[in-house]
Length: 300
Image 1 (cartoon, rainbow, N blue to C red):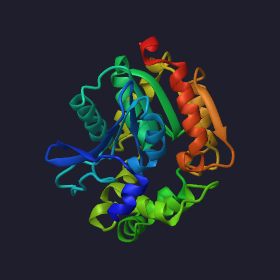
Image 2: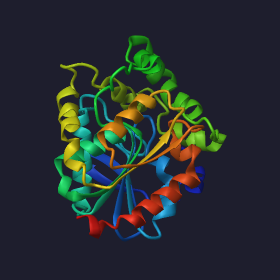
Image 3: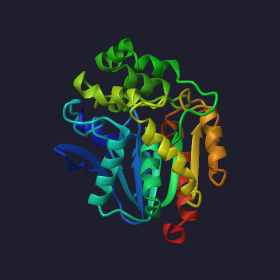
Image 4: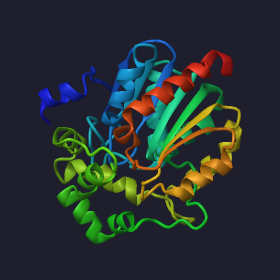
């Protein structure tokens, strides 16, 4: 990775926490009410650079890279269990390490939704606000189908494409923005952490861990999260949605509306999955307004 280019677009101090012998990378910027950013696949905390820059003058912004992602270590299967449950345990370990156990605002995207909401339903007393963006914390909604791109990635050929050619990360950087294409520099930083077969293990394991049917490894844990969402009904929620997302499509947005009618919804018809790339100014404005309208101390 080009260090000068990284500093240009991601001007934050890198910090690390040892978790069972693996270095988990995170940033911790600003002070005040804590805002915790949880990314999905195949992105990393770089996704949140604009929001962190916008919010850190008034809030404490913590964004992690999951093990196997971003600037964190990328161990093999023999040294790390790439599962949803382990991701939630890692998030919990980081927040306990930072003594962040109350008044938390979660900002969640893609797989970060299932990870963050799994944490939230198990620790509702710690959560003050939630921001959801093109994500899910429930099973496939009625009528939903796994997109062919993800179905391919779960096949033997797909595994070769993902780990041999970085197809998932490179494809996402090009096709998950629909309004504001990434510059070559920004695209390169999205994909740089996944420069070899070994470094792409998590981008594949995340896809393989999607719970599609009972008996899948993540099914029971994800089902418990789905069933616990009602316990967060009193927590203020902001939902930002790029409507041209071919993975988290209109069925997922409808399911959020059904499950969380109390939430504040903002949909962007021309924007895609990487909503924070397509709508950086609007996202920052809406998140700032939402946080100001729901002070953490007034919620819990």
